[in-house]
Image (tube, rainbow, N blue to C red; front, side, top):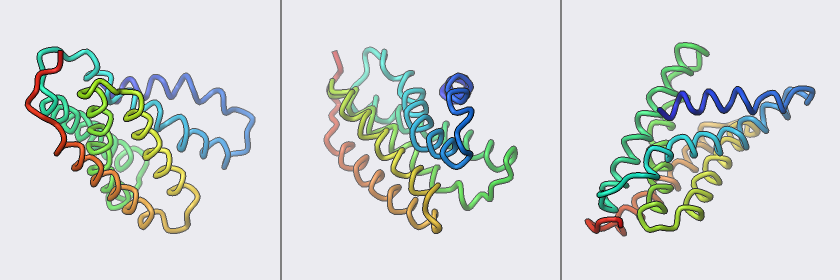
Amino acid sequence: MSVPITLFIVQLADPFLVGLPQFYAILISTAFFSPLIEEFAKILPLVYRHGETQRSIFTLAVMVGLGFAVVELLLYVFLLGVPVLVRLPGLLFHPSNTAISAYGIATKRPVPFFALAVALHAANNFLVVTNPFPISVSVFIVGITILLAWTFYGKTKEKFIV
């Protein structure tokens, strides 16, 4: 569900970039639109969950993020010809980042955690586009994201969300 939503919204957002120099259009699309759209699309299926515990929402988020990451990897590798190695950090990044947003949902504070997830995603994408060594930067941001997700997982409980 998240991937079609992302692709649909991107088609609506990209026309706003027409007329900009290519580098700036790519930068805005990659570092602003994509993080916002992707993070929204990934948590949308989790927002209206009822009868779940904090921990189960977190676990569902990891699964949604992993599904998104696998589909994104396949699209980039087979449709755009991007090397698999370049896309591998996304297999860890998307589940961890979605889990950060889900922690906000589970603790009834969705906005700051969604904002954190979007900021991490934007930072990763911005640095990948502007850095001559994108893999090293991506590994750093992915590492921070995994550490935060692991920390938030430790704070979840088997407490039902009402």
